[in-house]
Length: 415
Image (cartoon, rainbow, N blue to C red; front, side, top):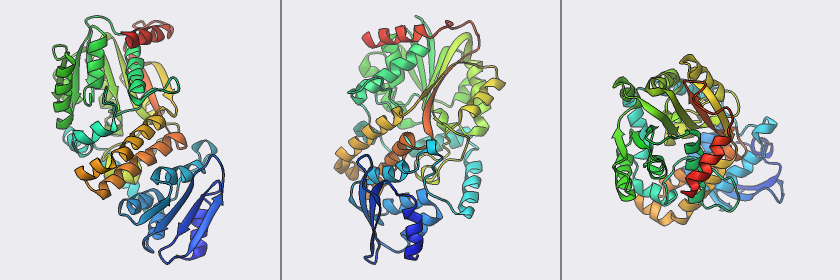
């Protein structure tokens, strides 16, 4: 690729902050202008095909080249490299990160259609791809207190990751308006953090469900250690099968699971939740979401991290839930909270680099840290956020103002 085309591809994308680029043949160029708020990064390309791959599909091309060691970062890190590119094109300014060749756009659309068919068997395979890689990795990366693999809540500066995750649990629990004796269903229970928190802080019974065998085993172990195994039950079951059994619950909570449902199954998900929720019950759904209109998942994430994953827009969620008469009684949009969480996870992975390399290899470590860095940038400067949507089947089931949430949150954190 000619120097003119390289200058056009990169020079247009980097204006604030600097990127020093050394090609495989030794040619060096520097793009952008130093700025105190933007990173200064230097990279070297190991071969002449890297620029071509990036030109065809920027996000996938950069990700795979970095994974394979074909992009060598000589100043800064992968977090700084992606931040530099993203921050120069923020979503609010109608910016876009990278480009994609027309034929790649067609392939992306076809892959989205294929992956969106998320039947129970495929759901289990998709979950296993990400969550059954071993609990040891997640123990190194996540907070020790609750092992939460979802967006934390940062109401004040100076919080630790564990404190922010506990604040998230209390924030969500408060929106459930729990009452003594309630039976709560936790869809996508992870390693049991939410279920254990609810059983420990409120006089409720919790059933947690997951499709990950690794998560199930550790969740049961953690519940036993916390002394709540008499109030918490974990099952390896799909929510659709649970609904088919005719089970009902006073409260339903789901955190970080809706991203795996798939658009064609949205109506089924909400219908089954409505079926399982008691007449005056309350449901709280926490999910990654989009500020803008619906788009297919990125190729790198779909290929290497979350096969079958999809980030919903609020309009998609509302359209599907309205069809089954689940009323959205409260909607909160969390901005930047996940970016702060992801930076903590990234820092922990960098801190435990040698241990992760011993578990996997260099290529996996590069893939994993690229995923965390890319995700961070989309919450800081891209179009992603988090939605917390409260639902009910009865308009009179909840107080008419939000005061009860703050009161319950304080009580849960002080207990």
